[in-house]
Image 1 (tube, rainbow, N blue to C red):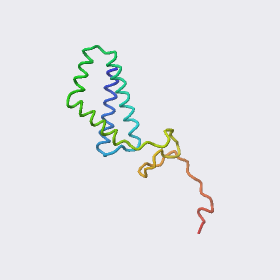
Image 2: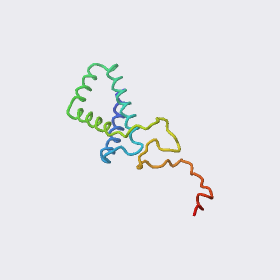
Image 3: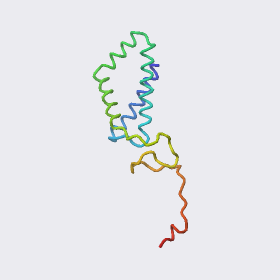
Image 4: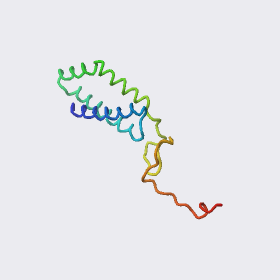
Length: 122
């Protein structure tokens, strides 16, 4: 449980480094961040429930230090800067779920066929 929390925290730290460096979530970075944070939160919850009391107390001491509180503040800042939710949560292979012009077109999107009237409309 604790090793899962440590690994998830490392993944989250790497993702947040890129977010804070760019000043925003780049396309495709928010879901991995939330996944890592959720995995870490779940592992910590399980650790708190099943860990020995001394280990849980030590963890709580670490999380309540200024550095631990700073991590929580940074996570909250990142979540506050999250991209707007898409209208649909179901991914589509041909269209972006976001309307932002900065979102690149899907490389797997099928090319649209043009008719002879489209190209010869002069």
